Length: 134
Image (cartoon, rainbow, N blue to C red):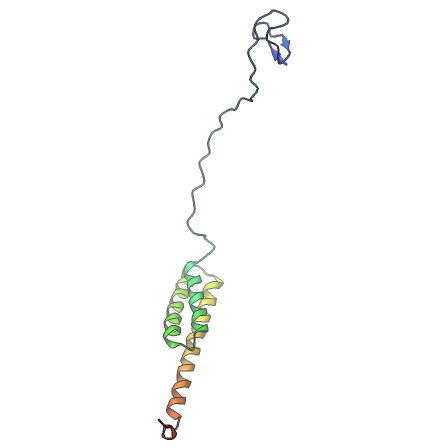
């Protein structure tokens, strides 16, 4: 129901004139009137997830690499050393299991690489090369 702007009598929605005073009724649009809503500022984008520690993750990945490639000392030794450093830095900045896991895997990878290099060296030096024919 629409009210007359002149006498405030209730009229039908589609009425063009008031039934009581005959005044012209305002035109009713078919589309609903939209009201402006205030725009809320967006939340600032947070860089990085505070739950994750990039140094600890890098240390863990390098520790796993050093452990997997322990047969190749030229890969494993640098990966172990950098993995130990990164895990220690990650452990210093934020106590996390990733940093501890990276530290343990990098140290184990370095120890295993050293054991393999020593074992190969002992095997080479203890081999009887006089029986080897060229």
